[in-house]
Image 1 (cartoon, helix red, strand yellow):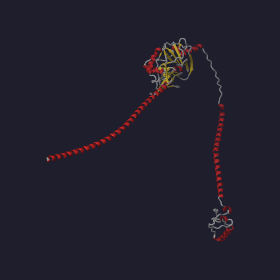
Image 2 (cartoon, rainbow, N blue to C red; image 1 turned 90 degrees about the vertical axis):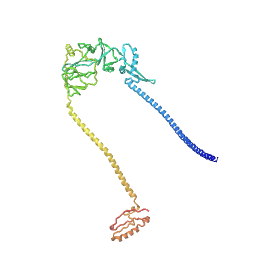
Image 3 (spheres, one colour; image 1 turned 120 degrees about the vertical axis):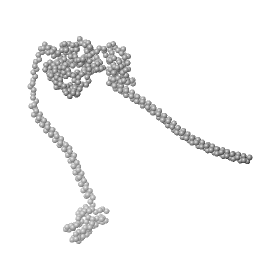
Image 4 (tube, one colour; image 1 turned 120 degrees about the horizontal axis):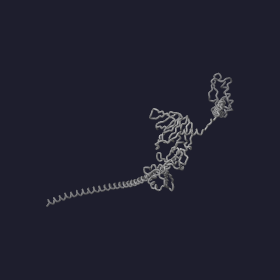
Length: 509
């Protein structure tokens, strides 16, 4: 029993130790858990604080991002507004030049709008070009714009010309001189610069240079001209150009025939090509020089005709230089129209029939000579030169006087200042003198100054010095306490050797 109890007790002790160690470990574990819990709480608090800061920063960033987005949208709106304003400004600027801006109305939409109104056009009128999207640029070339601003609206008025179905051919009329004899030429003076005639040559309109320039150009060699004159009938109107275009063999009487005289070659340049009509009184050499060729080509011109020069070439005659222009147009007309008759023969026959006698005009050739007055002009010119020299001398004297007068004034002023300065110095010197110098003007010396006369006259000077002191004792009573006294040393015969008289004022007390 004792053994069992002892073993049980030992076992209990061991178990108790184990339990105690377990409890101690548990307590340590609990302490560790408490420490870790506190540490975790602190960490969680730190994390929470950081999260709150991050949340605040995130909220700030969110607000900042929202503001930046709004600012970006506002900038986009402002840019869009600025772009629209620039577009409207450009549209107005180009509208002043007669151009329709695509932002106002696109060419395709314009074609569609014109198609909608094409059925309601007046009879016999049509648009200048077919309403096809390919011809949109041609429509834009012929429209006329009117732009104005009303009730906060920008209003465009688009004017499109309507044309008749009749087609007219435009001719530019150029007089072509024909050589008659020597240096005389005959030509027909045109009544107008341009003439437009229909295909049947029964209707025509005359145009001036200004009227032709107002025509609108659609494409090359096609124009739209505003009718400013009525259409005339060829068989009723007396027009020289129309009669000539109707292939007549004689010159109509209504034509204005003129005879001109020229010793030089006449050149007339055609408008649509680098071609010149020429008429020469005598054979003349025309030298053609091109940039890409070193050798020159000489052509002999006779009577009348035409000459064509390339773009890179120039032609030189005895009196003219022909320079081609860069723009050449290929005309639909195969050749120029020249009436099929000889204008010189017809004119000469008419002159023979009428037998016009032109009498000689006598001119008075007794001209007066102008050379006899030349010597008088020379004398007058010499007199003018003398007057000019006299004027130059007066100017020089005036300049010298202008320079010397200020210098003289300055010299006088300086001299006056110098005199005033000298007077002032003399005045101050005299006012600064003492009563001693005024009483005894001969000499002023100090009493304590040693004056040693020569040895031969020493006794005489000493006696004379004592006598003068006794005589002047009454006059210098006011200066008994002064350090200096005025003494008049008068030598009976001559001054001692080594004695220098001086004038020194007494110091006032």
